[in-house]
Image 1: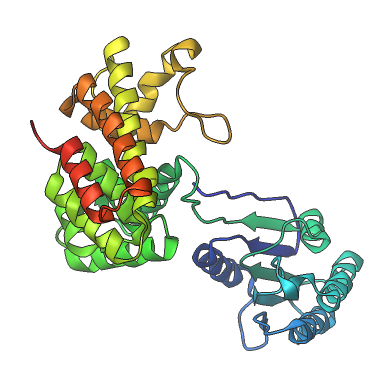
Image 2: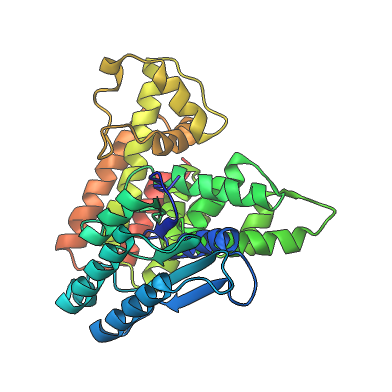
Length: 371
């Protein structure tokens, strides 16, 4: 799952992170729980500010709301909603805003009237700032970060989001279906929710199991998803699908060298690594990518020392798992030849006058075409 951290606390709550959709949804749910209801139960301060002066005004309004006792006694909620001035940008770094936030932090530290709950929601947020650290000391902070598709293993986090969303809607979804939606949406939470809602309506009340055909029929593939789906099509030796995805990526302005380095070469490398592991250690073809990781856990560290690592030092078992599902489609010799073909294509893209599309089309046919 994307990073979610919670610190202990009281009447002060913050929901922040790079996942704007996730932050907004979680903040609405928490506000509904904290609000005592009634016309005077909740005071919302719009945190969207165009400049530093507007941001300071929003903070001052928040302070005044916090220091005002609830009408008729009881409790109330003060919600600084969608604050745009907590990020690392010119507005967030301005002295005007920093001074205003220091005043708000001091107010929170001094204490607010009994029965007053404070909620702030913001996306993104600069976690290095003293105001953010004060929130963590005084209250409960929930961090919801978006899936980072630049990091290996993002597919697992995105698939978790898909499965959670499907479960909430009462939809049955196979592992392959969840992975497909994760890839086609690029792990974007808003798009995942939107596509699951679409599938929910399409299936109706009678049929609740989502098939891969349903996903391919209804879910449009994102730009990020197309890059990774191209690799899957090559691994499946589905040349028509791979060429169609290549055409789409080039049409939308993706550079050929980027496609080669981000999709085609990693796919071939993973296929060769998976094939070698399966032959050397007699590993079985997994039913889904996640099962291959469990097989790798049984191997000695020395057996895995040559495998590429994520930034945290762990293995990107998902990418190897996808490769292991398809590795039997290729011989080791074919995959070694495919790596040499990738090198040839790289040289042609950089030094020759050949059209980029022609170079990559020939490469895909050379790798994935049946012999």
